Image 1 (cartoon, one colour):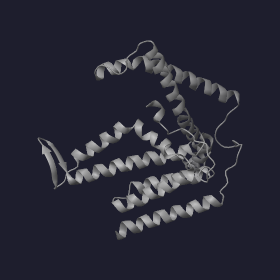
Image 2 (cartoon, helix red, strand yellow):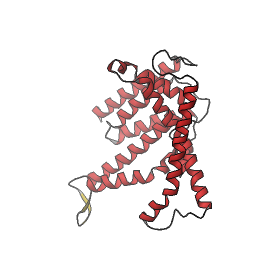
Image 3 (spheres, helix red, strand yellow):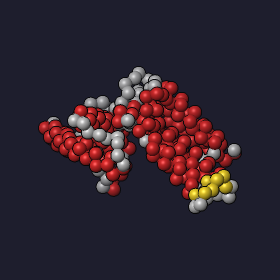
Image 4 (tube, helix red, strand yellow):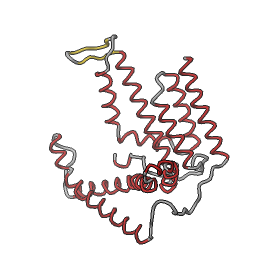
Length: 267
């Protein structure tokens, strides 16, 4: 389960998606997510899924590897579906037992929320799988530049976000090692009730927090030793430049939004 989380990992491949400018991928992801929360019928959902499927094929990232990220939050997806199923009010009652009531409107809402969450996770995973942490940092910093006039530290925010994404797989590996070490010492994480299972996680969380603080201190020392200074004047090893594929991607993005709006108005 620990190794099933794909957000924050980078999958090396030679694809047109990998070669896109990070700003293009960030803008495309944000627009796609906004559209995802606006659409509300089966036709626009099918069209959005088809566009995402095309992006996955072009990225050359195995679908099986991307879908691994669904396993880690399967409980949250199921819980979200159940909550929407029994809390959405409607007139067409499908099943009722006491205060529990399942309606047709609730079933439709639950299905939409589950599909929306799955698509959102796949889309986010595709962004990090095809973009290195350094590229993400540069792209986020560039997109946050207009907010500097309002006192927003764009460089620092971008660096924190990229470090957080970069250390997700590192901390997951550390957690997996700690769990295996505790199991070798006859620790039991599977038996007992909820309270016992929560107590059994203490021997895992304590060394994990200590390791996380130690890594953060080592990273801060390394950045200071290299005279890192954020903000204006910081140079980059590779300058970002929009290419032909980036402009093509923007055209496809505009067409995607336009077609989605037309489908919402006509269908």
